[in-house]
Image 1: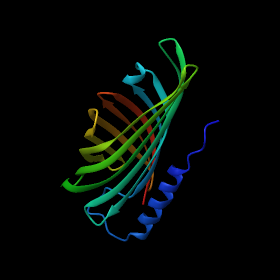
Image 2: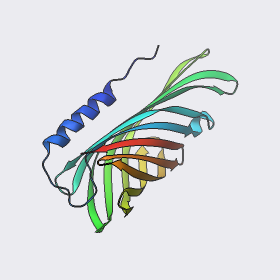
Image 3: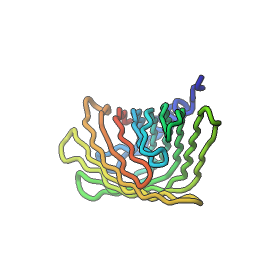
Image 4: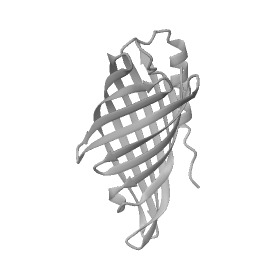
Length: 205
């Protein structure tokens, strides 16, 4: 039976505490202090295009007027068939990073982020068990824009590097604020090795 991973809950609570403790004012309408829970579906080239389903938890806290600290945890798994062999594949991704952001216009921001990432993959099948672990660094840049009062659009490009491989990915997303500080959204990440579709619920503070 799969063990419950309490890391996302701990990360979310820690970030919420840091965010509420911070009294720094934001430089514009965009908040960089938030907690986001997502349902994800990942398509991975190494698994011959098979898809994994799971969830992610992202938390971010503003550091002064133009910086932020962000953490993200993703967990996805599924039973898949590769070359006639049934396998249970489990994937966990960890990200911790710092970013900066500045105003482009009254309704747009640009941001840049440096992060450390770890990708853990495990598989279980009749022929034996195995794992595939990657540890590296990423650099990302993007924009956030609010064309309407309750609508946010976002886009980013990211470069990930480890000792064995590199990946460039592009991500686009949209959010709609249902009530004050609570928004729903969807985003799609297109990468050289992995594509991820996510449905998001975000609370800003």
